[in-house]
Amino acid sequence: MALHNKVTLASTPVLLALMWQLRNEPLAVCTCGSMLAGLATWCLVPAAENTFKRVGLSGKDMSKPAYPVLAESMGVVAATIYLIATFLFIPVQFRSWWPAQDPHSPHNPRVFSFDRLGEYLSALLSLQSMVFLGFADDVFDLRWRFKLLLPTIASIPVLIVYYVGYGVTHVVVPVFMRPLLGTHIVDLGTLYYVYIGLMAVFCTNAINILAGINGVEVGQSIVIALSIIAKDIANVNSGNAESEYNHLFTLYLLLPFVGVSSALYYWNVYPARVFVGDTYCYFAGMTFAVCGILGHFSKTLLLLFLPQVFNFVYSAPQIFGLVPCPRHRLPKMAVDNPLPRRLVSRLRQEADPDQRSDSSSEGSSANPALDDSAAGTLSGVHQAISTAMTSFSKGKSRRTKRPASGRRSRSASAPSAHSSAYMVASRTTLEGAKPLGLAIVGLYELLGIVDIERDDHGNMISVNNLTLLNLVLVLRGRLTESQLNNCILLIQILNSLLAFFIRYRLSHLFYF
Image (cartoon, rainbow, N blue to C red; front, side, top):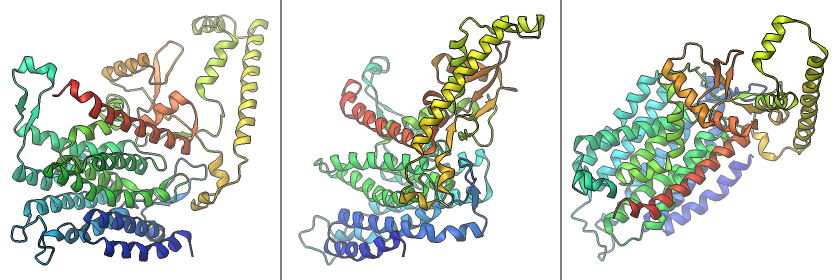
């Protein structure tokens, strides 16, 4: 019997007993139920793997040398278990309103909280709709215009409940803008609903854009969810009943999400055994959007999404067609040349600092044969590159001699195929790029956040694909897929700390 099955069989009775003992504490029941949902996902994902492959839901892992075929759209398994867990939690959440409960309960059994039930059900309806639409995208490969429309449709239940239950559309004006507007509160009216609707569209697509390597979609979602949970736990006992309910509402939705996502991450992290698909990306994004809208912390949520915001802005030239955009912009393997292209260029410049492209072209046109000095320079370049390649290969061989751990056996490919795979930034041609796109790429070059290839005349001919994954590889050089995923997760963690610092330490500079 596999490890995950043994752990699940041993843990399930304990968690069920705890749920019964703590049945009067909804948050404790939700925590135990989230663990059960995680264990169920941990077992059902590998059990459903072959079934998904048999019906054609599979694809090649292009980041591995052997191109292993993995089951796709496994996010639908995690999302289904999440929905089951949240449905089962409905009677527990409203158990205090049952007539047979403690007579000293603060809730009057004759006045049931239909508004809170409506919020919770609308959140689940939006999530269920987004899971269905995400799975349809995995199966039918929908176009981008539909990917922008579908989250808008799925968010309608939440927007309607927000309108009926709250209708709060005013915002507090920052201090530095109050003299200009002459007030400290502005009512946005319909524009506020447009804003929260667009936030649902952004959250669902932002995670989908920042994807392409093992574990990055689920990993960033777990970090964001844990950050929100930490915020809610720190503020749940604020003394304000409405604020306490909002924090508990968010916890009831995010605790099961972390449970199923953690189990899915085990099977999706490098070396991945399954792909999560667009279903999970839409499911995760809509979960955050629903919590931000109904939990009333949309500004804090956007702070937690700063890496995704940067990735969207950085990718905008390709997304809007200003720069050619290939179908897949994920980083590519580098198995042919162990040296980064930038290092080779630097070695050439160090070997011949006075060499210029114009003088070289003039010299070659005047005399095609190499003279003694040119031959000596070329020999020096080759010697420098060969020395660097030898030292790099020795260091690489020392790193790959480590024995494979037990977790690597989860992959269908041989461990040797994974140990030699390094990632470099993928590239796209600039042929056919719009003038505005070339101008933006030139601005990126001034900021040092792109790697541009030029011809002998200085014209731009190619650039790295404009994603955060490729940017990390441009700045850091070649990395393994696992190292690249860890870099993205570290960026997400540091951003969460920055977001909380801005929210709780600097907000008084703008609002008071």
